[in-house]
Structure formats: C-alpha cells, structure tokens
Image 1 (spheres, rainbow, N blue to C red):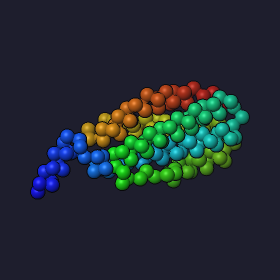
Image 2: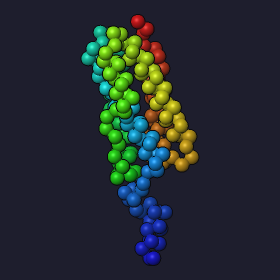
Image 3: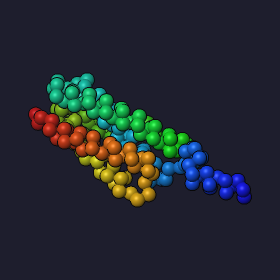
Image 4: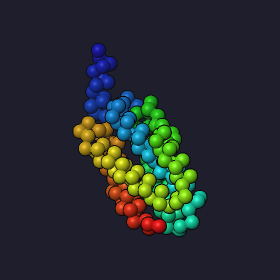
Length: 165
C-alpha cells in the first residue's frame, strides 16, 4: 500500500521517469500514421530526385525528403520518450505502396508527383489538425504536432505552386 501511495505521489510531482507513461490507442494511431506518411513522402521524393528532369521538382523533392527525415526523427524521439514500449511502423502503408508503384510507372512523373504530394500534404494537415484538437491528446505529441503544422501548411502551398506541365 505504501508503495502505491509513493508511486502515485511521484507521478504527481514528476519524479517517476516517462518509462511508466503509456500512449493511448489514439496517440499510437496518430503516431503510426504520421510515421507512414513521412516514409511515403521520403520515398516519393527519392523517386522524383532520381527520375525527374525538372529542376524545380527535384529541388522541392530534396527539401521534402530532408524535412520528412528530420520530422521522422523528431516523431521517433517523442514517441520513445513518452512510451518506450511502442514501436512505430517502418515503411509505407499498402495504399502508399500502390501510390509509389503508380509514380514509378507513370509517363508524366512530375505531374503525378505533384498530384500525390498535394493530396498527401492535405491529408497530413488534416491528421495533425485533428490530433491537435483532441482533448486527451498526449501533451508532448500534441506540442510536436503544433510545432510541425506551419511547416506542413507551407509545404502544401509550395506543392500547389509546382509548375503544371
């Protein structure tokens, strides 16, 4: 009994390490989907960097891959701090895999990439906005999402400005 009281008191004053913390199923779902989106956008950007002949598209793809790699590291670190037992998925979702396959096999790579990334960025914004609005969102994940949201808004606008060919 004394141990339970001590543990409860330690949690209140913040003495117990985050290893005792657990992410909710909604927090885990958000983090898992965010990780998959990062992986998809990195892979799509690598395809464009390799095969596009348009410098503007390659430049945007390089920026996006670099940003998503950084964001992915931030997400992994935040999740590990909040719930060390939870592992983010690695790789893309089956739907994202189909998108990547379509991108590899299209005749107009740049326009296909533009369409996919505009859609993906819009979905990313919605995912992050919905998570931020959750009343019971994990405070650290929510803070991370709030910090990344303006970057994603700008990237969506930048994707929309890619030239139509």
